[in-house]
Length: 174
Image 1 (cartoon, one colour):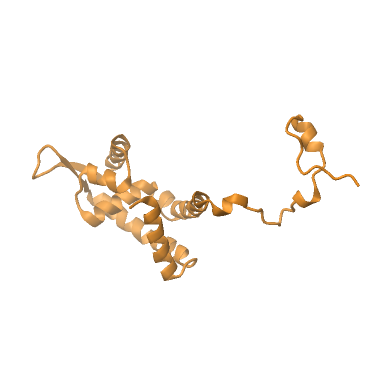
Image 2 (cartoon, rainbow, N blue to C red; image 1 turned 120 degrees about the vertical axis):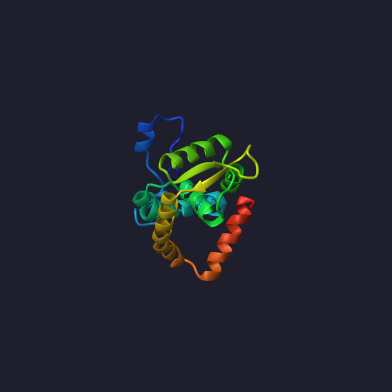
C-alpha cells in the first residue's frame, strides 16, 4: 500500500504543495492543541507568552485609562518611591540608554508629570522630580493597578508569585 508523504516537497510551487495530500497523523482539528515541540523548552517563548498576557492587562487597567506606557509608569513609580533621582540612576534602573531616557523624560515633562531641577549639591547634574500632577496621576494609576495585580494573583499562589519574581530577576540579571 502506498504511503502518503508527510510533507510536500519544497521544490514544488506553493499551489502544488497545497494540493498534495497530507498524512493523517499530521492533520489537526481546530480544537486539538498544537504541539509546541522544542518551544516547550524555550524559556524566551514562555516569557514572551506571559508578557502578552501582562501587557494586555496593563493596557486595560493603566495604559489606556491614564495614557501611560509601561516604561513611563515604571519611571513615575520609581520617582514616587524614591523622590528626586538623577537621569543616570533612572536609566540604570530601567535599562534605558541615554537617548531613549531623554525622549521619555521629554514626553513626561511635556505632560507636566515631572520636571528637571539642578542638583542642590552639584550644579552640574540634574535631578528628575515628580510634579504634583505626576504624583496624582501615579497614585491614581497605582490604585487602578490593584485589580490588575489581583487578576494575576488569581493565577498564582503567594509562594509561586514570590518565586516567579525572584526567577525573573535572576533571568534579567538583577
